[in-house]
Image (cartoon, rainbow, N blue to C red):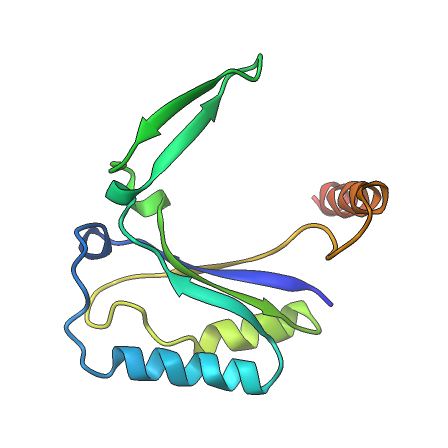
Length: 142
């Protein structure tokens, strides 16, 4: 079954470490995640600390690494939280995403939903074959 990541996109507020001023948000989010768990589609989910608490590892063409510590200025490219689901179809993932509670009530925000590549718990040779097949199908569809 296809797996999808629902990414809660960061805002200036989440990057500042400010929790939304909505006393019902945690309750609504927990109820929604509980509903997904009861439906058997929820794999995992969590909020993320601001990028000031994180770091990035950059790779050059030779594979050498360079470390950058947060915070990162590109707020729109950051993720404030995620939910992993496993559903029967793209349409089912879309249906769950459209019911996702607004993560930052009272301000513009968005979630991004993307399918995961690969299979679960496969030997490396099978996982590589599946990844290559999935990427080929994506490229053919373009």
